[in-house]
Length: 313
Image (cartoon, rainbow, N blue to C red):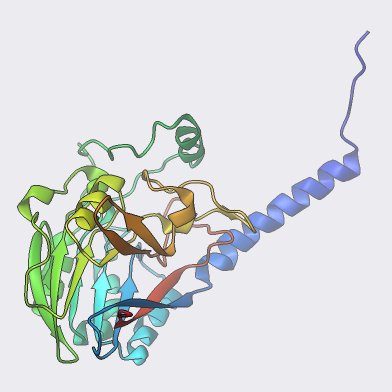
């Protein structure tokens, strides 16, 4: 006769209470606990003046997110030399005016941008457990998602027109230049690899000559893109998309990345290597979430102020 084991009632109640507290913290506090990450990256020519770059990503604005709007407004007080926006500004088709209002003070600075899938398409409810299951089987994120069909559109063109009017450089599968703090910066960008809109052949060949700095910009840090940028000799790549894992385990880190980059590089500064070159990679954990999964745990929302300094000789 098999013995039956029962979980003591007090243990079950304690586990339930702890789970409820964790959900309340993740959805009620941490998701609105905005932070500024500060990072120093030695990528400028020797003797160059340091440059301060504000990297914002994955805002996922939903109408009525007043605290997020106020926080984004406040970032202009950092007085960056220029701004890089790596996409996914929207998570609500009605929120474009609020996203643009929140970014308005930052658009007074030089800047550049790429879009992510959530700029183009409105989000749909999805079981978060699928991300864990797909990661466990190794099936998710190898090549990105197939093109979307019969999905409501977000008004990305409103963002594009406002960014362009402000003088921000559109890096959708193209190159651009901007001047910031007296420096000439060459930029190369791709459309979102997560929905297979990247066209590296259109921008291949490495940084344009004569600039003080070359940057590569993309929404989702898929390995095929990082390999291409690094092989072409870009010293710094900026990306977003991962939300830093969004739901992390304290003292362990992220479980998923929503692409094929490994969890150890899901946010912050790291390096990426090819046989001939090494690039710095900065992945923003972003400051928002999909509107249908508005939680963060051990991964607060953030923007990053990168101070670019001269390389060591």
